[in-house]
Length: 230
Image (cartoon, rainbow, N blue to C red):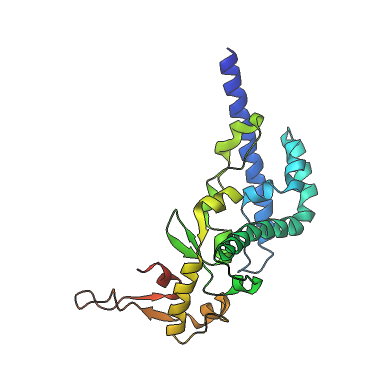
């Protein structure tokens, strides 16, 4: 009987947690609608694990209390969202700094805005800019380290970003940066000053001479796709 009771409690806890996350998602998405269309936005679990939100919601045990807490949290969403994005970007910045340090290269923050500074997602083998990496979907399936009494809610979390996930799935390579810089230079673009915004504005179409052939014709691609071509 104890096993049946424990399973029931776990199910109820999971269901309540799922509905809590859903409500948090709803109010955060409402706030996101007030931002510019191209503004990046953290996922629901990042917001949940923000200290302000997590402390407030961890003590909630009823739906009535949940709505009261969410009402109190709403005015602080601008600061909470900003904190979440800063934390994710700092983790990614650390990846870049570590690689520069290993190669005895000097690092400057301006490097992060360059078009040649790209991250690789090992899960889907795609190349991403800094802002794309912050909200990349492959990082939404891993869990934060929850306390033992919260193990039942693990499967309720569907959007999660952690430093561990960034380290295990997202990588940065100075060698890749230098290789892509060569491609940009061959297109008449200065890789040392050209930013992601600059490349998106120019939006060059690049032909891969190695992939093009008589049977299938010319192979052309946009600039972000060039990095993954051997």
